[in-house]
Structure formats: C-alpha cells, structure tokens
Length: 171
Image (cartoon, rainbow, N blue to C red):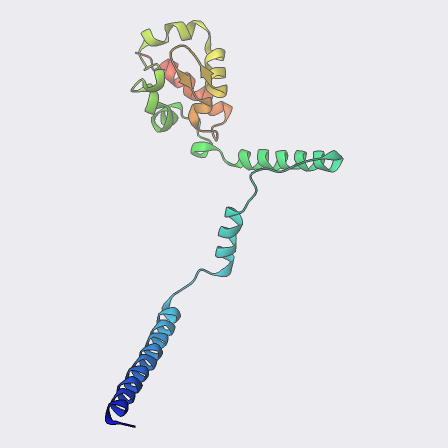
C-alpha cells in the first residue's frame, strides 16, 4: 500500500467513527426527550378516540330494533331533562338578558324590539300563540324566531316566563 491509500483509510475511518458517535449521541438525546414527555392516561386517550369514531347514526330493524330505538329515545329524553338552562330559573328578566336580548334589543333577524309598536300585531294573536311560537320556533314575514330562542335546554315554563316578562316590559 502506498502512502495515499493509508491516509485515505485513516480519514475514512475517522469519518465513520464520527458518524457512529453522532448516531449514539442522537439516540441518547431522543431517549432523554422521550422520558421527559408526559402522556395522557390511557382512559383519557381512549375516551377521546371513542368520541372521534362514534357512528353518526344507528340502524334499528325488527322488534329488537324498535325496542332499542325506544330505549335510545328514552335515554335522550332523560338526558335532556337533566339539562335545564339557567338552573331552571323562571326569572324572565334574567333569561331575556342572558339569551333573548341578543336579538330583541338590536332587532337582529327581524326580532321585534321591546317597543309596543313592534308588538301590536303579535299581541293581537294572544299570549298563547306568542308562547307557542317561542317554544316551537316561527318563520314569519319579518324574520325567524328560533325554537326556545336557540337554547334547547330551556323548558316550556322558562320560555313562557320570559315571554310574559317581555310583554310586561314593552315601552
């Protein structure tokens, strides 16, 4: 072997050794970073995954399907019954300020403001009709009233109390 070959092998060996050392340093660094990371506990991760892969709908067929559909409807009704807005308060003024005032103060979406002139035609229909429209929602020529003011957790009594409060506070 000549002198150039020995020099080349020496430099090549040094480069290979340097790359091996760099690889070892990177592996140690990756292990240290991995050990410092905290991962969610398995139950939280599994719950998030389950929520993401829930089916959009269910298929009910035959007698067992009808029973399952009835059970699902009952479960949904029970869940909705426990979800009462504003703690079940019948304070129409508080519900108006928290929910209804967003549209009825500014007139957004054709909502009548609390000026008696805006309500004359509506008052002629009667309180029961106003409450029914507030509960079920209503599409009129002036605009749209979403069912329960857009909050499905409001119960019928809360809606009626708020309609009464609004009628009592017309200017």
